[in-house]
Image (cartoon, rainbow, N blue to C red; front, side, top):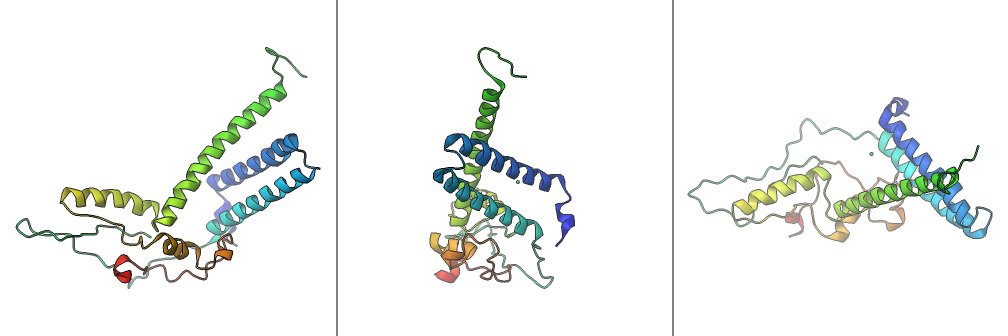
Length: 212
């Protein structure tokens, strides 16, 4: 294990946030809601613990896995997007760059109530943030693109529109195929972050031209 990968403030910050969210959710919210000794409390805490373990495991895999290197002999397939002013522009031009975190009382409010309120507001903020991040990554997966490719696509679409052309992300094959390319063809292994046997060399990927 490359333990030196953990020796950074961002990594420790992520573990701190995960631990804080787990503690507040299980030992404060679920405990006060239904109680951890009840069947409903045990079920909710077990489900949340399972999801938290998957989250930690996914984070560990992301930290410890070598992202790889582009082979020195690799030559990208660059499409010709330039044309002279006196030439008829092509019908479709694809422009893309691929590079594939002591009790006191004030107005009738006790410190415990303030603590619960602060925890609730923080959990709400975290839920909104994580929900937005989840939705964003679902969008990226269903369109088979990275964040860099998304912003490159905005620029490519603007350039294409400016030239009277149309643009479509070349790796956006279909929703189902895009998901299987990222998570794998076996749906039972989608929640296993260590399941990477479906990944290939990381250099070549199927495109719209391959499926046409």
